[in-house]
Image 1 (cartoon, rainbow, N blue to C red):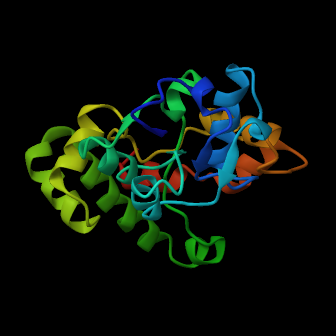
Image 2 (image 1 turned 30 degrees about the vertical axis):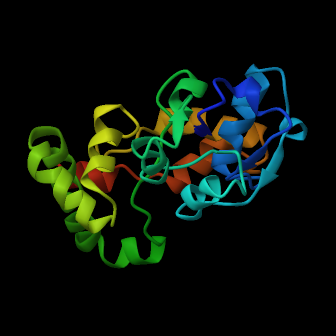
Length: 210
């Protein structure tokens, strides 16, 4: 979450214009968790569906006063000195908030499992480079994501993102899904069934030779 320099806590959002707010989405669920801890609900703020690349400019021209955002967009305003980071999804959640991943249509995965495994091998290689050779990986990531090296370095060095395993953790994703269900992001008959259908670690395990 990125906030203008005058704000120092989630409680300071009361009555202010906050970007990145779209009901029934993951980011807004995280915001709702943060507001709940501060004794508030979404009704306490003025939410605007200003997302991603539009947020730094919206903050700069005062169209919004704060934002729940992703890197590198949050890092852009922080490294520019125009906003500060107050909290992260993982801090609000109390443990790592799962994010990202490789999504493949079931029909494609069934027809071309070798292609899925090959893609995951490349993802695993990229994650390994980020862990072991950041001096090489950070510039490459900055180039492909069309952001500055400064933003990439800030994001990794300050824990906004971190290299991870390509094998999804079903238990962690079940716990996350329960939060998303609480805030009406998903509505499913069974969380277990939902995750079993959605998450398939067997491809990543094969890519890693497990």
